[in-house]
Length: 452
Image (tube, rainbow, N blue to C red; front, side, top):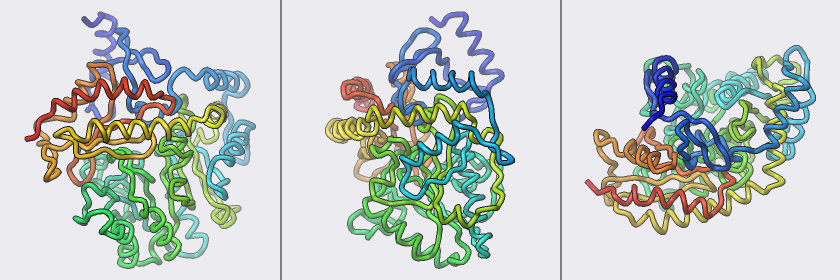
């Protein structure tokens, strides 16, 4: 029975506070109250395994005392300092230095933000300004269907107004954006099978560049592994081919590492899996383990030298010293505690179990992903890969059942090709035993699904 306190809170919340992906005027009846490790607790004292790091952002789990203390210490010393008009602060400088140790070599120039959406918007301006200063009118940005790049104006244009719905109702979106099929091999938009396709999804980028005119294309932007689109990893040859094409046509390669960064895929940054260095990289979420809002855009020395002396307007909270202090401490923990290595090791174990136990189930089309960024494909018919009828609300039922049994999971169902995927992306500090505990809850829920 829900307490009167919780009922009052829920009622006020429902009548006054907007919740993304829930509909204005709605909530799910859970108010989080406390947290520790990989768990959070609601106001009724019920504990949940965080099977999705909430928004794939609480990489270090909950209760990292050192980050909390670092925030308090910096707040006590310097509550705010802008990076406008040439001012700086110690924490933002030290944060930049620490980032320089972790990012791919050469990407040691930074513009700080409050999060991923700001980072995307700033990056689009950065890319277009770069070409403008070089005297070239390259302005178009190519991105992927099924991608996600935030919900600010630029990010929405990059994502588009397709099945995800993020741009619906507010179109027309910002012009100058071109979308191409993603590397979703299970549901290839070209109708091809991996290994016999010559990675056509990557090759197609070159075809579109030719059609649009290389002289018009400023950049190609993508997530190294699709996040909101379903935790979908690319085929091995995808990113090397994309880098080659961008070099061939003199186009900037932008990596959106907002979700994949800071160990999520078993590497500090996901493009390290293929030895690829982008020209621009966006970071957020895991940079502070979401303890406090922060983000960064890293870019190459070539871009820095080209834009030297130019004015790239940033944001009020760019380089906020308290946020920067949290990021410094989080990065220290990633390195010292070998969190990235744990994500690789435990993620490998989790994927092996998903393939062994879940893939044989009648309604599981497959499981894939990198590190602790895993997705489980749910289908109504394995032979045809047909998803369940939307009217059955299967994914919501899975999520509700899991939450009732003590695990929070996200569902991915926004790709341009109809599909349903369960997200398994817990905090990177999770143990093998905790993975088993989580999957032991999920398994019977998925096992009860019947083909239709």
